[in-house]
Image (cartoon, one colour):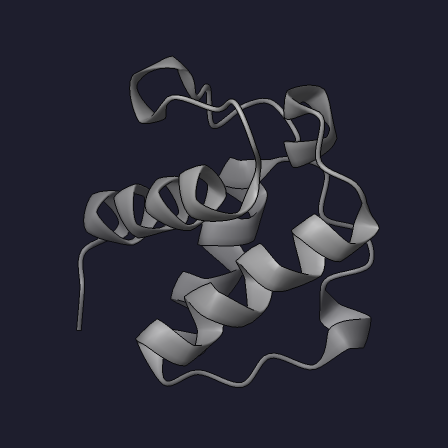
Length: 81
């Protein structure tokens, strides 16, 4: 099982791959992906890529209230345990 910090670093990589103009070093996990210019399709792609990498299935209904990158990582960690 990956540690929470490693899980968050993975999300950062997916954010960089899917959202133009974002540098991994500049990502603040307390911000939302929208703060970095992501549209809804970008966010879906980041979430989908992260779930595939973690071999994880989280119901979409569980993701609707996520406010920032840290909360997304925490939700994934819940499903890894």
